[in-house]
Length: 369
Image (tube, rainbow, N blue to C red; front, top):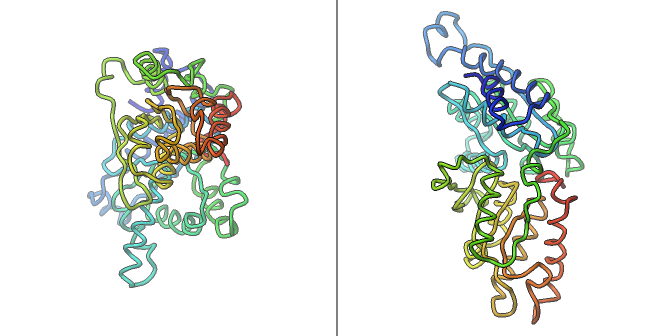
């Protein structure tokens, strides 16, 4: 089936609401799917007959407000395209991989490290799909124009989603003039498609669900579990087999995420704050997931000051990236650290936890600066 056919089947089944912007995007993605599948396999007789590689299929940049269905459509597209070499990645994780590859090439001391990385990537995939393109550091901004220009020249088709128009990427960033060629590249080589319908489906799916449940226990855990399945459309018959994943932490090591699906992750407080973790771990989570569910938060104080300190760092990271937080705890935020040394410093975290439950916060996009 084409991505367009699959989209309309979901609408007909009542699993999606009809949305003109999404329908228009499905048509464009189906066109790309057809074009990609029409390209003969690498090294086929058709390549030899024409004496050159086929022209690459033009890419697509889908942008719009949070929860407008961009990631859902990309998932449908990626699953529908029947080609051998394709890769889908969260943009942050992809860039960590790029920097790791560049470091390997630099150690060889044989010249510019970017071309060999481009060659390797183009050999691995002729379709690259990225979710949530956002640029918030100079290291990424400095290499993206040359990297993606090389990939496109090598015949790679790029499809990406973003909450921002290309002109707003890395806005007000340090040395932004070095990044401007990448914006020009997007406009020249990718079609730009807006998904900005009136409904924030991600917020709509959250509905009136409570984001902070007290106290811990089976009832709270069940409520959070139901919210997780509602947010991710996970079928009831498969709920005993929720997928886990691994995420990169600073490109140096992996962190196990017990439950992760469609940008939503589930953790226990013990896994996040009782183990030896730091800011790098929490930033990796915040960049990767738009919604985080934490179960089993205890009352905090001097008796568990190390766990409390890690919790403060965790909330700072989630807040910075505007991650939606759902949690079960033994107390409301303003009673979570009731007394003792460290209470004054914890008050800022209390304020953030309260703000993170507000409608204004929940309506913001992931990663909004």
